[in-house]
Amino acid sequence: MRMLHTMLRVGDLEKSIRFYTEVLGMKLLRRKDYPSGRFTLAFVGYGSESDTTVLELTHNWGVHEYSIGEGYGHIALGVEDIHSTCKKIAKKGGLVIREPGAMKHGETIIAFVEDPDGYKIELIELSSRVTEA
Image 1 (cartoon, rainbow, N blue to C red):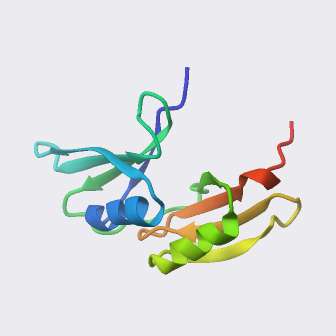
Image 2: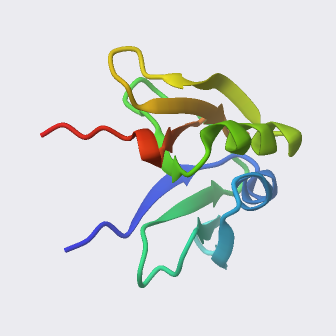
């Protein structure tokens, strides 16, 4: 078994696709409208769906906003240089909501950005990553 994708419901599909592709550097892998169900699915990621876990963006036609809820945490992305990554994201119009620094109770260097729908995305500097069993 392997993880295939994570799904987020988005209010403005075009805006979300731009954020994930232009700001975070993912590729639009596929997109399909389902007129009978009144929704569109778009899959974005850093590699092909056959090799990597991707993100499914679901847009239900006529719905422009969602409550994220208390159960959602974040998506995590590994990066080589967190400081330059955050600068690039901000320069492209992305919102950095926690600047790079050590996590509160550890040594791993993290930052957080927010997508157009308010979903949190954690950036983890790979060279500082500390895993615990």
